[in-house]
Length: 482
Image (tube, rainbow, N blue to C red; front, side, top):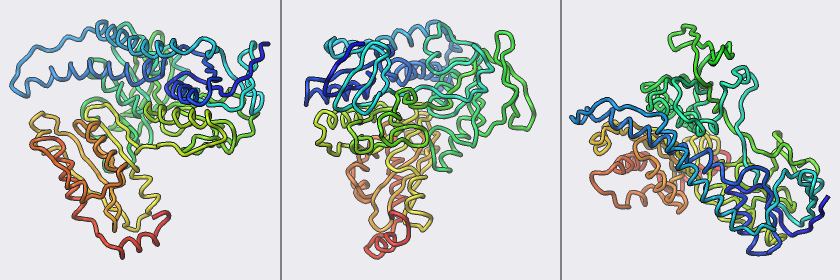
């Protein structure tokens, strides 16, 4: 058994791990990186990049399908599934290759392959070949898809999103379970590429939305395009021959039994922390076994262990993983001088069509914080008659903006609509700069642009707000954290 001593160990070579490694290196040269799987981030290999490649192909097909509505007559598009997947895999490998190149630049003596397990708060064992003693650690082990055990009844017809991007051709039919970000994006893209798709969920949830008005609108819009039931009843899940078979109650209340080429389980992800031996470290774990960490320092308890990225179970997005890795790596490098790092305004997007975006505090968080006492207000707009959206036949969408009464401080938004990814950035900048609604209305708006819909929602919000110290004082007294 090889024995090694070092200053910092980073466990995981994904987005968060690479960021942590680079930042720890600015404080000490004695940093080791441990990786058990293939190099290349989740985003590049099986996440955001290959899914956007599939979506881009779907958008091209949909644009041709919509052309007659503009008076542009074209033949019905022929979708070459093999060509679609060839480009997806080719470009996916290119993106993943950039990450591998970055890892290749790390000195070989800093990289160790294998699975890490904590023996105590200062020692880890790598498989059966190495024990490393270190002064501090960064856990950046990422996450993996998770699904109920009953799904195993589908046998080899059960897939996760990782498997989709290894297809050589498009199948004829797919049942998707989980109308979250992954299920919604892949499900709609496959549908637009000619695959028969049925999307099932429970409890009415769709995407990451918490605002009931936007959630209901999204349910209606997507169900108009392909089969979506976010409050489904499914039973008798099994593999029959080379098909996946299931029984469900349709929206008319009729029981249906149907077969699919595949069942895609997009029911969530769990942090890869269960085999790390964290119980040997003495740090506090939550009910799921995930380390309890300060989101501003990424320090676990008051220990020498830090965590970043999907492993933290905070916000599983690439830009968040990079920021968390920067904070964790910096603090691990200069430990015990632990400092608060830069945390940006929350921003999330779903690359469906229409897109979904969320910025700042969610509707659920705001109602929990400010209660039902009326200390925040909602402004809204429909994009169905918004000028530029209607010109482009992209006029599906609804926006809800939130601001504090008394101060007029803009605190968040949930919306669905055209080019939501771009509007979300404007709103995130406003949240991070602590702008009020009147200040936002002072910003320039060109004509004719989709952003004019945002201005309409801001005007609606501004008209409902009450300003002044009396309102501020009332709201400070009426609810938790108000």
